[in-house]
Image 1 (tube, helix red, strand yellow):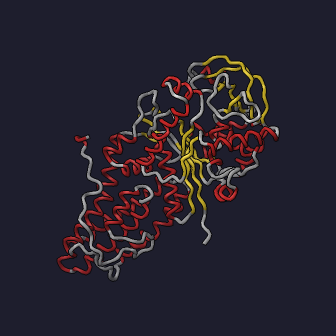
Image 2: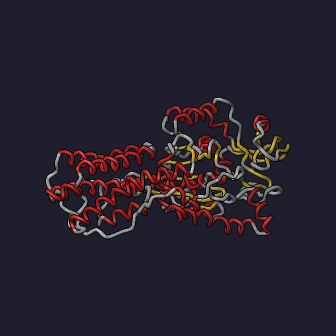
Image 3: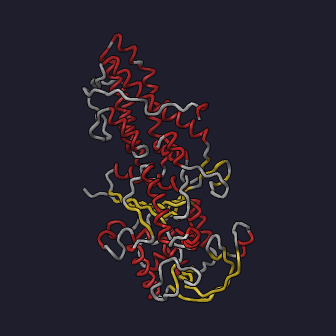
Length: 502
């Protein structure tokens, strides 16, 4: 059987940042997509990592009295450790200080220089020290940039403007390339203006911490011509032809909307210059807001994911982040809303259904899963909804509608809870034990199918449900639940959060 491939990437996070909910969201999203695609039988490669070069890293290292590499070696584990805490199933974690990456960046620089797409010129302009880049006068007037000064120096530039018309045509001919739709339109609007070339170097006299430019040892490459290349250096570009052919182009490159221009314009024109195919999808998700403000370290409104995990568990945090944000929009985070969704979806619906069926099976069938028997019309309705759930979820996941996919799964759980109320197996058991057994089998089998699908979102808790149900296989075909299996006694998976205890 020929499998589809799914190569998903997150941005590489700046090593000087403290990991926060924005980083966590993108990485969990990539993980959920990777897990869904693995469950669908696709071959999956999931990449994340850290960006370790730049002036801020050099300055921070100097303040600590460390060499930049030592500083990075100390900080990089903050991200890899958090991903482990969050149950992230990445296949690779790339650091831009790794030799495998440096070699590829230098080879690409030489290649792009040789084909005439890199040139040197003297440039004078407004430079934001805080952002480590030249800015326009309009940007300076906005007041958003700190420590702005006039800077004049020679640097190397990538001839990005050469590919402007080609990129416009590509975006127009591939409507699903930049998502969501309004972000595509935003980039097309940007490309209707003259596209300036991209400064890709810094003189070593000003910044020594970077990858040396192979054709001029007085300069290091700068930010995007280093960082963006991780997406191909990690999958074997110029080092493992077979691996690269297998995985590139990426299926989905997930980013926050603040780095859309760098990915949909800088990155794509770099790939054009290298004569490489563009990624299939660049998806820019929204921001997590606290009230109406973007979560920002400077505003002091950053939620630390580990704090939430410690109090309420990894899977509860993963579930909330995935179910609460529509991928094309911003989302508001409040602790009150987190608790409300947790109690409603996980404690009252999902956890309660597991407790009900296991409790009734324990009471009336000595803890042994009863047989299915002949299904009634009401039973067949549940079976039909559960049997088609997998295909509905798959379609939504392939459209990057993760919140809608989760809602479909939870809708089945809600329907089954109502079914239990109507069928009342605790009453049936007094007059027709086989009928009560049939109802409990139907409800438990629907729960099993929901748990199989929720495992991508909540790998630990949904996996625990399947363990409790004694399920060896994890397919979505109706009838996978085995009768005769003895259910264990277990503590509640999602104990309610009492507001006064928070």
